[in-house]
Length: 113
Length: 112
Image (cartoon, rainbow over all chains, first blue to last red; front, side, top):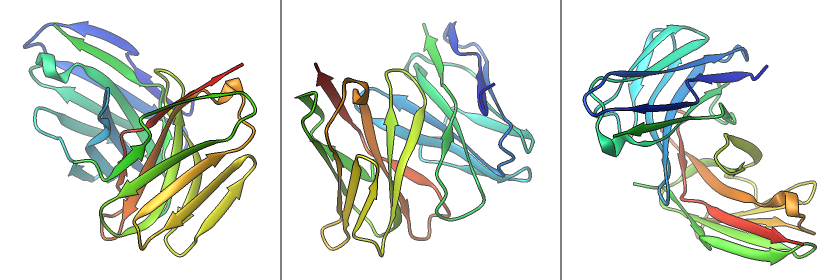
């Protein structure tokens, strides 16, 4: 089984719908992140969490919210999806250190029509 | 805005040749990391170089870091078709509490 699991892997939805992307990890890491990838733009940080009680906005948090339900679970919500939120979304985890590598899930491809 | 910019955006070489990718960044860093992404898949960490290091090796990978020029390079020697992927640099800036900022990536195509 994958260490960082994202669900769903693919989702097509309509403008205005609420969408939740879920991430769970078995690595025992405290730090979890949500990134968005768009062609030609690399990865951009949406939200990150250093523990269950710590949630921080990233570079592009507008239109998104998150919930850290447990150390192992970090969910990303789009309250009212819009077409420019069509992207590949990645969850990642890291150990508690200032130089840790990120461990990525396989991604959730979201299409908003 | 992106911290890192990779150059070139795309690179096509033949198997056995060396591939060099460059990354430039804008602000001071704690460390710089390189990641690989196979098409549509999750990123995989390749190598990390700290700001006080100038060169690091891992197998067929060689990374250099020049903090005075705010640049890094990734060299893949004796490339293989399986090296075909996108490669991203990511910087962990000073005072940014372990938030990696990714560049736009280099797409490497290795042909037989």
